[in-house]
Amino acid sequence: MPISIRRALRDKRRMISLHPITDPAGAVRSSPMLRAVCLTLNYIAEHGPIGLTATGALKRYFVEWAVDAFAWPFYTAEDLYAVNKVLNEGDFPPLTMMHDLLLNAKLARHRKGALHITRLAGKLRGDPSALWALLAQQFLFATDHTDYTRFGDRPMGNWDIFLNVINVEAQQAVSEERLCHVLYAPRKADGRHDDIRMKAALFIHVLRPLCWMGLLEEVRSGAGFKREEHYFKTEIWREVFKLDTDIYLVPNTRH
Image 1 (cartoon, helix red, strand yellow):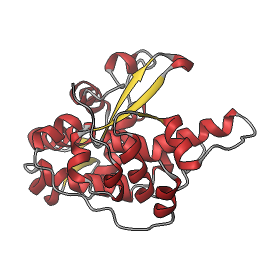
Image 2 (cartoon, rainbow, N blue to C red):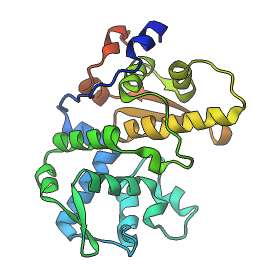
Image 3 (cartoon, rainbow, N blue to C red):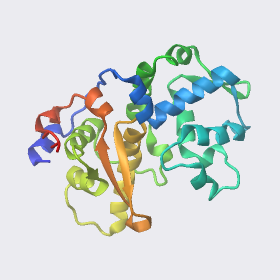
Image 4 (cartoon, rainbow, N blue to C red):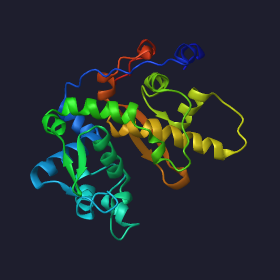
């Protein structure tokens, strides 16, 4: 991205607006978080409140159901049971974050040792477009993802900058390395440790939430230290965001 674009975006603090989704079924397919929330609300409506442990976590019977029902990318039952004999909520990170999101978005509450849906959730359960909009605003722009980090790192920048940069860089595909290069410019680091933590912070605070809301698609290749991730904008991204950097986009070539 040209330096002039970075300078134009620097230090801007604007509310990010989301345009309505016109394909709710497509949003459910693309967004693991929306799909999980819909399944959970429907589960409670059909089976009743979900039991909680003494520490306020969802009980194991629901965790086991959720692992199979959510079909969360990169968190398969096979992968989770490979390192856990039994599954508690903490062993399935997407479930923990969805649980927090339900509470913070006031779609559910804890009462008498169980998770109950609220009146708001009852109204939105049949409207995936409105439900997605509420979840996206809360999960992307109001949630402090530092709680889900190991070291408490935060990426430098704000959502206006992140979205506008990704808008250009992910027009075809972009890696974490490339985004860090564009956002923070080449620099001499004392060691690789700083670069790893920078990429981890960007992933946890920005890229993972965008993927889980269905705005980016993550494609992995390789394994171990040779694993690479590339990110692509989805149709939901193109529909809900109208960004300053749209004028710099070059249409994808179709053959």
